[in-house]
Length: 459
Ligand SMILES: [Ca+2]
Ligand SMILES: [Ca+2]
Image 1 (tube, rainbow, N blue to C red):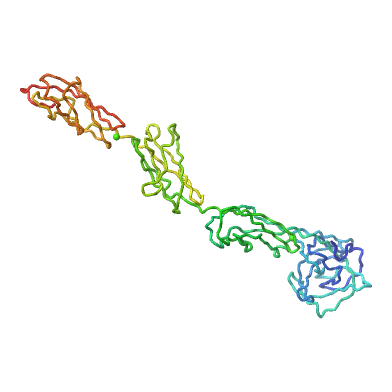
Image 2 (image 1 turned 120 degrees about the vertical axis):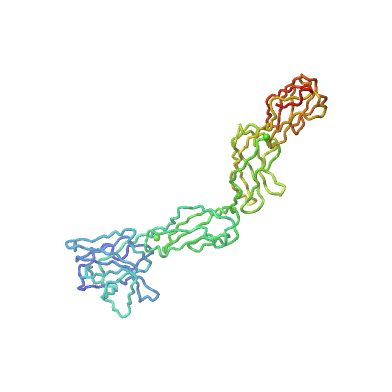
């Protein structure tokens, strides 16, 4: 849209003989017809020098104007009085104008914009400020006279206000359901490529029951409920150009944590009954459902399980007859995933190392040969072995020939089951100790029955 003269070169050639004057046309055709920016100035300079092309705006008092903005155009010596100068204003330098703003110009040197006297009223104010006006300066019109009814060789083309826009790059945020009122959830960012519009941008948010908008921040306003909420924002510049942005706010359950994990524990490969390996603890005490995964997997399936402990806590157990063999898998990595009633979950790990069985050991072995007097009677103790193991041991005595009258008691003592055989009889014994996991045999013991005259000898 045009304001002022669309073809200034066709307007007048007369120059005012002034220095440092500010000229303001207060006629209707020199007022901005709409909201927008000055995209182009058109001027016909008849003298070299700098001219500040300005826009002034009425304040509450229509006789007091404020300088909204200016663009400086410089005409070098040799360039003056030749042609109309068209100044295309870069986007970032455009003056934001409102309907009714006035065109004016200030020349620090001699006046360079020519005029022609009009027959119709076309009021022009002329001032000679002591210094060049700066943006924001006020101008009191009262008391100044209209210089004359004149048309000047100056005009402008208005550009539409460019649409403001949001600069946020993230459009989805997560907030925990226990976020307290007034916590900031999101901050909108926006701008306008019309620099003069930025200060006047206004942003609104659509109605939300859970969130409130205190520009530029979105805050929690009530008790949050799980779900996804789309908030719609609108940024509007002073000319009414609008941009919108949707932001999804996802309300998630407050986080939970398995505080007792990660952990390392061990269990013997001999464990054959359900064995508690670990009691789970959680950061927010409550009701949890847990599942287990494990590796390496095995054909027999998961040897571990979750169930309540006697204290009504959650425990990770080795199952009955889990049959975990150290030689097959020395360590299991158990993945524990627990979910609270809020549906918040956490996953952590329990390393279970398998302890190999300690094999029973024969200690305090009396020797690999023994002599038993033929005078010994049934019930007599004739030999003793000791076996150590952490588990209960079953001991067996293999006698050759097998009809030898010997038996081994659970404490390792060998007892005659009848009167000693006749002198010269010989036997061999082999003891077997079994912890129900591993079976160990002793060295062979050679047994000789000696006559009474020989006496009791032990080698
Ligand atoms: Ca704008
Ligand atoms: Ca053992």
